[in-house]
Amino acid sequence: MSIKINRQHIYMLSLSVVLLTFVLIFSFLVLIPNGKEYRLKRVEIKKEYRKLRQLSDFSSETSTILQNLQKEHRHIITAFDTPFSVARFEKQHRGYFSSLKLSKLEKKENEDNFNVYEVNTTSEISSPKSFYKFLEAVNSSDWIVGINFPINFKRDAEMIGSSFTMKVYSNNKDKPSDSNTTK
Amino acid sequence: MRYSYIKPRRKTALSKDMQLLFTFFSVTLFMLFLTYGFLVFRDYRFDQNHAEILQEEKNLRVGIEDMKVKIAMIENQNILSERVFTKNSVLKDSIHNLFDLVPSRITLSQAKIMENGLILYGVTPNKDIYNFMLQAPLRSIFHRTYSSFYPLDNGWFRFVSTNYIDEEANDEY
Image 1 (cartoon, rainbow over the protein chains, first blue to last red):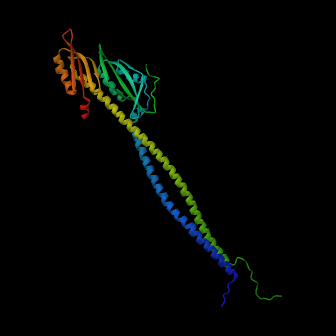
Image 2 (tube, each protein chain N blue to C red; image 1 turned 180 degrees about the vertical axis):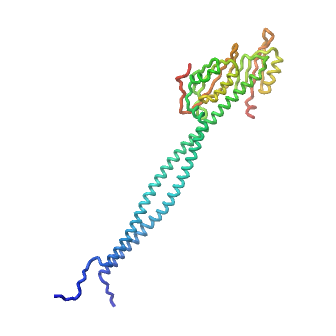
Image 3 (cartoon, chains in turn purple, blue; image 1 turned 90 degrees about the vertical axis):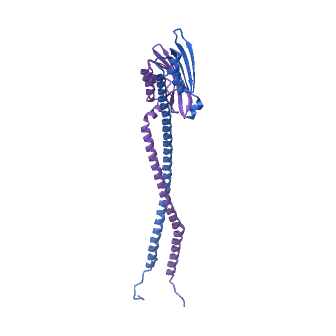
């Protein structure tokens, strides 16, 4: 018994087999691995987005903390950034003394990563109360100024002469203005 | 002359079966390539997003580090300024206390206030007034107190009082 198959059908069958093979090979070798990779990448990118969001939230929190600190300590930050001016200091604090003289700024060793300058001060006061007021005013001045030991008080008739050194603290990046220093 | 009663059937390469076959495979291949194209595009977008996320992450990290440095700087500034302000206030109180300590009958001519000591120069009507009214409170504050007297022509005494707080004892507190 012989099966008669039309030649056209043989061509069709061959073409179908070839195309089906192509579809299967393409699906298994290209599409399925790519699909798996796509799913993995999608999960990975979601993780990365989550991580980025956390980082962004942390950045916002840090920014808020910084802004609050800057707002809270505005005076101190400005004081550290303001270059020390001998003339301006004398002008601001002359009222507490009968006479006030500051010597030239001298750079001392850095302290806690801040620049420290030392100023010799000689002054005359009529009563110790003026000196107390001066010490109170120094804490709210335009610079961070610390009064150093030793402090000498010497009576001279009705006046009290005082001499002491002051430490002026500023940020490392800044240099105090020497142009206004009195020599 | 006609040999057949039926009309001849036109033969074409694209028979109905072939058309069906081509339609089926065309649709299948189109869907396959469309899916492949989608995957390739998504892959490209993922890579692009990944690069963007990395860049943004890098920028955020740089920003956070910068802010942390600024925060540390402000905290350091705050600590240092508090220390300086406290020192100034303590100094003010010390000077205030010193001048309050000196009785009205004793006149100071000079005072030297040091970190761990105090030197006073002055005149007193007699040694007892000095001893009871000035030296006694000084002794309660300082660990070592030395006094020297020099008689004056008017019967009064010029005195030098040297007072120290011992470093070691001071550190214990």
